[in-house]
Length: 100
Image: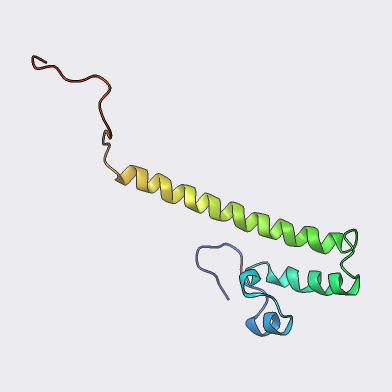
């Protein structure tokens, strides 16, 4: 499944995410990494020094998604700035005189 506006593909299917009880806010392009991470966490009783490889790969994937969204937003802002006419807003610092 392809996600619009993202370079990453969805690897985990909806059925797999439902079976693994992945919460809806976490069902993104990195869900295929979250499923084995959650299984490892449950098997290791959520010990923080366990499952480091799985956690690192999941957090790296999430970081890449955030950076990709930030770049997309920056491009959108740049396009909007190009389209927006240059306008002076607010009160002028130097008032215009009658003779000027």
